[in-house]
Length: 100
Image 1 (cartoon, one colour):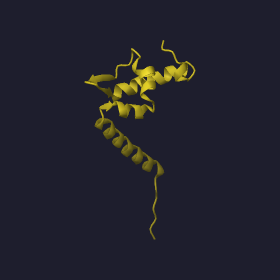
Image 2 (spheres, helix red, strand yellow; image 1 turned 180 degrees about the horizontal axis):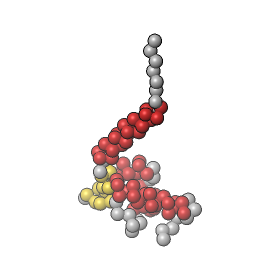
Image 3 (cartoon, helix red, strand yellow; image 1 turned 180 degrees about the vertical axis):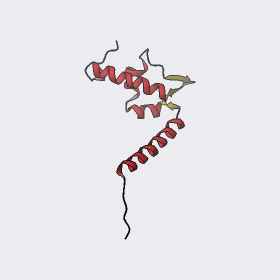
Image 4 (cartoon, helix red, strand yellow; image 1 turned 135 degrees about the horizontal axis):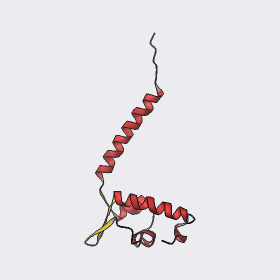
């Protein structure tokens, strides 16, 4: 007779390690995002993104390459974290949010 003992904590730990490794690889693969990728990433239209994010003087995650915009993903993530908190603190509505 065979008896198997499964350590649930060890399985969860191993799964977390694999997920963390895969996420690290994905983060390293993408440094710059183009406009289409960013709009998909933030789930906004260009007009909304331009009005609420690009026009903010504190937004410094974008550079131009000719007529093309390139976005630094890490800087974009930092800005979006701050933007999200600021919008929440002012009532949670992006359209009613005024930058301080």
